[in-house]
Amino acid sequence: MTEVSKQEPSESEFSNLEISTPDLCDANPDKVRVLDSIFRGFGGQASFSGRAVTIKCFEDNSLVKQLVDTQGDGRVIVMDGGGSLRRAILGDMLAEKAMKNGWAGFIINGCIRDCVEIAAMAIGVKALNTHPMKTEKRGLGDMNVPVTIAGQTIKPGDWVYADRNGVLISESELALI
Image (cartoon, rainbow, N blue to C red; front, side, top):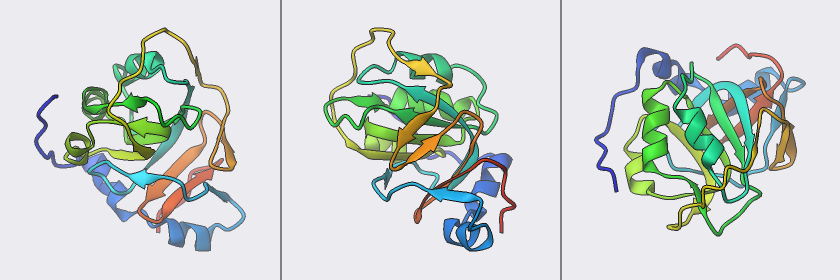
């Protein structure tokens, strides 16, 4: 287990502190799609936003490992893990790499592990639940494909807005209120 100290958000991450999904819904009712309320918040950054990079991966986080090693530029990784509650597709080491490489956060249709360590990181993480077992690395999955999770289809490049109230998707960037 990696020991992680609470890290202050960078200047770009401070803008994420201002997100209010209820306000965004009120101001843009015809531009937002709301994901079903199935996600729990695990990251130290309660609200976050960015363009979506999508991954479809069932109980295999090989693509996630590759992706977090790249520059995130404030984007959000949206992972369709098939809703599996049998394996964790994100742990503290990958979350820490993502944070250091400028990723804003994760929306995960699946489980995470190392939740105490991830809670101490300045990165947003929404997932279904926790599970202590890691995935097998088989090199399976698809990146930058449309994924359907929580009642909505998310395409690569869509905008993701998340806070304690929920998760929104928009085809275009929204003015933060």
